[in-house]
Amino acid sequence: MPVGDRNGAKVWRRRTQTESLSHWALWLTGVAIFAYCWQQISGATTWFFVWDAPRIAEDIWTRATPPKWDYITQLGKPIWDTINIATMGTLIALCLAVPVAFLAARNTTPSALLVRPIALLIIVSTRSINSLIWALLLIAIIGPGVFAGVIAIAIRSIGFCAKLLYEAIEEIDNTQVEAITATGASRWQIMAYGIVPQILPAFAGIAVFRWDINIRESTVLGLVGAGGIGLQLSASLNVLAWPQVSLILLVILAAVVISEWVSAKVRGAII
Image 1 (tube, helix red, strand yellow):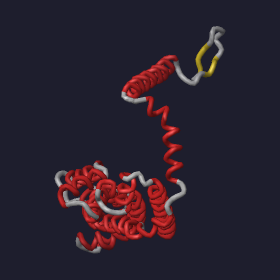
Image 2 (spheres, one colour; image 1 turned 45 degrees about the vertical axis):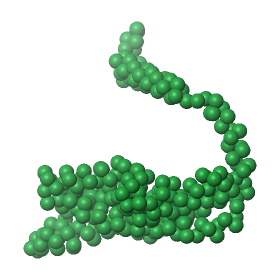
Image 3 (cartoon, one colour; image 1 turned 30 degrees about the vertical axis):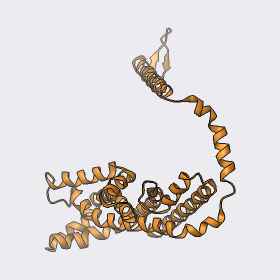
Image 4 (cartoon, one colour; image 1 turned 90 degrees about the vertical axis):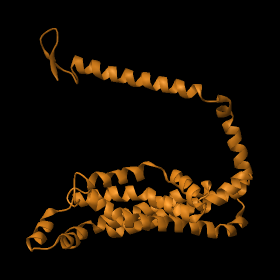
């Protein structure tokens, strides 16, 4: 902004003196917070292991290469289980997320004071807990295995899918809804012919996107006993079979890349 110098001429400055002082005060506060956090982290870190990390990493790399290629014959069923965990978990989540999304959207909820807060609570609670934690809880309840992984993925995905879907419902064009309402259609007919057709592309995109994410998450559920290829990875790590570990990681990488490619193709076809 223009300010006067000693000779009375106008000189442009980006900030006033008060704004400059506030700007520097924020920077100093940020630096002080960073220094304090670094001090706490440094005090809780065993720096000997940090400095020795390159040597350990080189040793593990030497042990893990080349991968044990003949072990791939034992990874067919685990990777298939992983894909099934992600797929079934996504399907269950979508079936549960759709009604929750309609109950959470302002323009479709039966009650903004009672029903909508409950739906939003379901969305927040299922999104806030990681799938690994859900898997640990479910393993303690229903035992280890693929079923616990499916339910863990499903619970984790409900909030994600419902949140994106209810936002899409709230952003629909009300003109089509008003036109169908004017014909005397019932509430269910308005929903079926005025709302659902508008959100179908968003629903399909959300479903594919979440399935792609679940492929990644399901690969590690086996580390806690929820089945899939993570179970093979945990077993190999426990016995320090590094050539097997490197092969499993390559298989996981290939599965994630393929799922990403499929997801991109499907989303491109929908959009």
